[in-house]
Amino acid sequence: MNNNILIPLIISTISGISTFIGGLIIFKNFKDREGFISLALSFSLSVMISISVLDLLPNSFFTLYKEYGLFITIVLSIVTFSIGVLLVSKINRKISVNKESSSLYRVGVLSMLALIIHNFPEGIATFMTAYSDISMGISLGIAIMLHNIPEGISIAVPIYYATGNKKRGLLYSLISGLAEPLGAIMAYLILKRYINNITISLVLIFVAGIMISLAINEMLPESNKYNKRVHNLVGLVLGVVLVIINVLLF
Image (cartoon, rainbow, N blue to C red):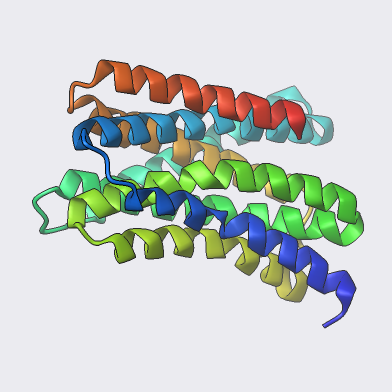
Protein backbone atom coordinates (compact mmCIF):
# COMPACT_ATOMS: atom_id res chain seq x y z
CA MET A 1 0.00 0.00 0.00
CA ASN A 2 1.25 3.48 -0.90
CA ASN A 3 2.65 5.35 2.13
CA ASN A 4 0.57 8.37 1.09
CA ILE A 5 -2.48 6.24 1.86
CA LEU A 6 -1.11 4.03 4.65
CA ILE A 7 -0.10 6.83 7.06
CA PRO A 8 -3.48 8.64 6.95
CA LEU A 9 -5.22 5.28 7.41
CA ILE A 10 -3.05 4.49 10.46
CA ILE A 11 -3.80 7.92 11.97
CA SER A 12 -7.56 7.50 11.55
CA THR A 13 -7.43 3.93 12.90
CA ILE A 14 -5.52 4.90 16.05
CA SER A 15 -7.81 7.86 16.75
CA GLY A 16 -10.86 5.65 16.18
CA ILE A 17 -10.01 2.64 18.31
CA SER A 18 -9.13 4.90 21.23
CA THR A 19 -12.77 4.31 22.21
CA PHE A 20 -11.52 0.88 23.31
CA ILE A 21 -9.07 2.59 25.67
CA GLY A 22 -11.97 4.40 27.32
CA GLY A 23 -13.82 1.10 27.65
CA LEU A 24 -10.99 -0.41 29.69
CA ILE A 25 -12.19 1.57 32.71
CA ILE A 26 -14.73 -1.20 33.39
CA PHE A 27 -11.87 -3.36 34.71
CA LYS A 28 -11.46 -0.97 37.61
CA ASN A 29 -13.46 -2.03 40.66
CA PHE A 30 -15.34 0.82 42.30
CA LYS A 31 -16.77 0.52 45.81
CA ASP A 32 -19.60 2.93 45.02
CA ARG A 33 -20.99 1.33 41.88
CA GLU A 34 -23.97 3.66 41.55
CA GLY A 35 -21.76 6.68 42.11
CA PHE A 36 -19.38 5.54 39.39
CA ILE A 37 -22.19 4.90 36.90
CA SER A 38 -23.62 8.34 37.64
CA LEU A 39 -20.19 9.97 37.27
CA ALA A 40 -19.46 8.13 34.01
CA LEU A 41 -22.82 8.95 32.48
CA SER A 42 -22.76 12.63 33.47
CA PHE A 43 -19.18 12.91 32.20
CA SER A 44 -20.12 11.25 28.91
CA LEU A 45 -23.23 13.36 28.32
CA SER A 46 -21.23 16.48 29.15
CA VAL A 47 -18.62 15.52 26.54
CA MET A 48 -21.30 14.83 23.93
CA ILE A 49 -23.09 18.13 24.48
CA SER A 50 -19.85 20.12 24.73
CA ILE A 51 -18.40 18.63 21.54
CA SER A 52 -21.64 19.42 19.74
CA VAL A 53 -22.01 22.99 21.05
CA LEU A 54 -18.36 24.06 21.04
CA ASP A 55 -17.08 22.20 17.98
CA LEU A 56 -19.46 20.45 15.61
CA LEU A 57 -22.25 23.03 15.39
CA PRO A 58 -20.29 26.31 15.19
CA ASN A 59 -17.69 24.98 12.73
CA SER A 60 -20.32 23.36 10.52
CA PHE A 61 -22.59 26.42 10.67
CA PHE A 62 -19.74 28.74 9.65
CA THR A 63 -18.81 26.48 6.72
CA LEU A 64 -22.39 26.46 5.45
CA TYR A 65 -22.73 30.22 6.05
CA LYS A 66 -19.75 30.98 3.80
CA GLU A 67 -21.37 28.98 1.01
CA TYR A 68 -25.09 29.73 1.34
CA GLY A 69 -25.59 32.80 3.52
CA LEU A 70 -27.45 33.15 6.80
CA PHE A 71 -31.05 32.20 5.98
CA ILE A 72 -30.37 29.00 4.03
CA THR A 73 -27.75 27.98 6.59
CA ILE A 74 -30.23 28.36 9.45
CA VAL A 75 -32.86 26.33 7.59
CA LEU A 76 -30.41 23.58 6.64
CA SER A 77 -29.03 23.43 10.18
CA ILE A 78 -32.45 23.21 11.84
CA VAL A 79 -33.71 20.55 9.44
CA THR A 80 -30.54 18.45 9.64
CA PHE A 81 -30.31 18.76 13.44
CA SER A 82 -33.99 17.82 13.80
CA ILE A 83 -33.53 14.70 11.68
CA GLY A 84 -30.80 13.61 14.10
CA VAL A 85 -33.09 14.18 17.09
CA LEU A 86 -35.93 12.25 15.45
CA LEU A 87 -33.61 9.37 14.59
CA VAL A 88 -32.69 8.86 18.26
CA SER A 89 -36.38 8.82 19.18
CA LYS A 90 -37.10 6.30 16.41
CA ILE A 91 -34.25 3.97 17.38
CA ASN A 92 -35.17 4.25 21.06
CA ARG A 93 -38.68 2.98 20.33
CA LYS A 94 -37.26 0.08 18.31
CA ILE A 95 -34.88 -1.15 20.98
CA SER A 96 -36.52 -3.82 23.08
CA VAL A 97 -34.28 -5.56 25.59
CA ASN A 98 -35.31 -8.19 28.08
CA LYS A 99 -32.83 -7.18 30.77
CA GLU A 100 -33.26 -6.20 34.38
CA SER A 101 -31.27 -3.01 33.70
CA SER A 102 -32.84 -2.41 30.29
CA SER A 103 -32.78 1.38 30.52
CA LEU A 104 -29.05 1.36 31.22
CA TYR A 105 -28.46 -1.15 28.43
CA ARG A 106 -30.50 1.02 26.06
CA VAL A 107 -28.30 4.01 26.89
CA GLY A 108 -25.21 1.98 25.98
CA VAL A 109 -26.66 0.73 22.69
CA LEU A 110 -27.88 4.19 21.70
CA SER A 111 -24.47 5.63 22.57
CA MET A 112 -22.81 3.05 20.36
CA LEU A 113 -25.11 3.79 17.42
CA ALA A 114 -24.73 7.54 17.83
CA LEU A 115 -20.96 7.30 17.99
CA ILE A 116 -20.74 4.98 14.99
CA ILE A 117 -22.49 7.69 12.98
CA HIS A 118 -20.28 10.30 14.63
CA ASN A 119 -17.02 8.45 14.00
CA PHE A 120 -17.68 7.71 10.34
CA PRO A 121 -17.38 11.34 9.13
CA GLU A 122 -14.56 11.87 11.62
CA GLY A 123 -12.69 9.06 9.89
CA ILE A 124 -13.31 10.73 6.54
CA ALA A 125 -12.12 14.09 7.85
CA THR A 126 -9.02 12.64 9.51
CA PHE A 127 -8.04 10.62 6.46
CA MET A 128 -8.57 13.43 3.96
CA THR A 129 -6.72 15.94 6.18
CA ALA A 130 -3.76 13.63 6.71
CA TYR A 131 -3.76 12.71 3.03
CA SER A 132 -3.23 16.35 2.10
CA ASP A 133 -1.09 17.39 5.12
CA ILE A 134 0.39 14.79 7.49
CA SER A 135 1.14 17.24 10.32
CA MET A 136 -2.40 18.63 10.31
CA GLY A 137 -3.74 15.10 10.13
CA ILE A 138 -1.74 14.09 13.20
CA SER A 139 -3.06 17.09 15.16
CA LEU A 140 -6.63 16.30 14.15
CA GLY A 141 -6.10 12.62 14.99
CA ILE A 142 -4.86 13.47 18.50
CA ALA A 143 -7.82 15.76 19.09
CA ILE A 144 -10.27 13.07 17.99
CA MET A 145 -8.47 10.45 20.09
CA LEU A 146 -8.82 12.60 23.22
CA HIS A 147 -12.57 12.88 22.89
CA ASN A 148 -13.01 9.28 21.69
CA ILE A 149 -11.67 7.95 25.00
CA PRO A 150 -14.58 9.32 27.07
CA GLU A 151 -16.96 8.27 24.30
CA GLY A 152 -15.73 4.71 24.84
CA ILE A 153 -16.61 5.11 28.51
CA SER A 154 -20.13 6.19 27.56
CA ILE A 155 -20.64 2.87 25.76
CA ALA A 156 -18.75 0.33 27.86
CA VAL A 157 -19.92 1.42 31.33
CA PRO A 158 -23.70 1.17 30.80
CA ILE A 159 -23.35 -2.00 28.72
CA TYR A 160 -21.20 -3.70 31.34
CA TYR A 161 -23.28 -2.70 34.37
CA ALA A 162 -26.49 -3.66 32.58
CA THR A 163 -25.27 -7.10 31.49
CA GLY A 164 -22.33 -7.91 33.78
CA ASN A 165 -20.39 -8.79 30.63
CA LYS A 166 -17.06 -6.94 30.30
CA LYS A 167 -16.29 -8.44 26.90
CA ARG A 168 -19.54 -7.09 25.49
CA GLY A 169 -18.86 -3.63 26.88
CA LEU A 170 -15.40 -3.59 25.31
CA LEU A 171 -16.65 -5.06 22.03
CA TYR A 172 -19.34 -2.41 21.65
CA SER A 173 -16.86 0.39 22.37
CA LEU A 174 -14.42 -1.08 19.84
CA ILE A 175 -17.12 -1.42 17.16
CA SER A 176 -17.99 2.26 17.46
CA GLY A 177 -14.32 3.18 17.04
CA LEU A 178 -13.88 0.97 13.98
CA ALA A 179 -16.34 3.22 12.16
CA GLU A 180 -13.49 5.72 11.91
CA PRO A 181 -11.05 3.67 9.80
CA LEU A 182 -14.08 2.39 7.87
CA GLY A 183 -14.91 6.00 7.04
CA ALA A 184 -11.31 6.51 5.97
CA ILE A 185 -11.36 3.49 3.65
CA MET A 186 -14.71 4.52 2.18
CA ALA A 187 -13.37 8.02 1.67
CA TYR A 188 -10.50 6.70 -0.41
CA LEU A 189 -12.25 3.93 -2.33
CA ILE A 190 -15.74 5.26 -2.98
CA LEU A 191 -16.63 8.66 -1.57
CA LYS A 192 -13.57 10.71 -2.46
CA ARG A 193 -15.21 12.53 -5.36
CA TYR A 194 -18.37 13.30 -3.35
CA ILE A 195 -16.77 14.45 -0.09
CA ASN A 196 -16.50 18.17 0.51
CA ASN A 197 -16.79 20.60 3.40
CA ILE A 198 -20.53 21.04 2.84
CA THR A 199 -21.46 17.35 3.06
CA ILE A 200 -19.22 16.80 6.09
CA SER A 201 -20.73 19.86 7.81
CA LEU A 202 -24.27 18.59 7.24
CA VAL A 203 -23.36 15.15 8.57
CA LEU A 204 -21.79 16.67 11.69
CA ILE A 205 -24.86 18.82 12.38
CA PHE A 206 -26.92 15.65 12.06
CA VAL A 207 -24.53 13.94 14.51
CA ALA A 208 -24.86 16.88 16.94
CA GLY A 209 -28.64 16.43 16.92
CA ILE A 210 -28.20 12.75 17.73
CA MET A 211 -25.72 13.32 20.55
CA ILE A 212 -27.54 16.21 22.23
CA SER A 213 -30.84 14.33 22.10
CA LEU A 214 -29.22 11.18 23.46
CA ALA A 215 -27.47 13.12 26.24
CA ILE A 216 -30.55 15.05 27.41
CA ASN A 217 -33.32 12.52 26.88
CA GLU A 218 -31.54 9.27 27.77
CA MET A 219 -28.25 9.72 29.61
CA LEU A 220 -29.24 12.58 31.91
CA PRO A 221 -32.35 10.87 33.36
CA GLU A 222 -30.39 7.63 33.76
CA SER A 223 -27.62 9.45 35.61
CA ASN A 224 -30.05 11.37 37.84
CA LYS A 225 -31.96 8.30 38.95
CA TYR A 226 -29.08 7.24 41.23
CA ASN A 227 -29.46 10.49 43.19
CA LYS A 228 -25.71 11.16 43.25
CA ARG A 229 -25.64 14.93 42.84
CA VAL A 230 -21.94 15.41 43.63
CA HIS A 231 -20.94 12.71 41.16
CA ASN A 232 -23.20 14.25 38.53
CA LEU A 233 -21.73 17.71 39.04
CA VAL A 234 -18.13 16.47 38.96
CA GLY A 235 -18.81 14.49 35.78
CA LEU A 236 -20.44 17.45 34.06
CA VAL A 237 -17.60 19.82 34.95
CA LEU A 238 -14.87 17.35 33.93
CA GLY A 239 -16.56 16.75 30.57
CA VAL A 240 -16.82 20.45 29.75
CA VAL A 241 -13.24 21.15 30.84
CA LEU A 242 -11.87 18.27 28.74
CA VAL A 243 -13.64 19.45 25.59
CA ILE A 244 -12.61 23.08 26.11
CA ILE A 245 -8.96 22.03 26.48
CA ASN A 246 -9.31 19.84 23.39
CA VAL A 247 -10.82 22.67 21.33
CA LEU A 248 -8.24 25.24 22.49
CA LEU A 249 -5.22 23.01 21.89
CA PHE A 250 -6.27 21.52 18.58
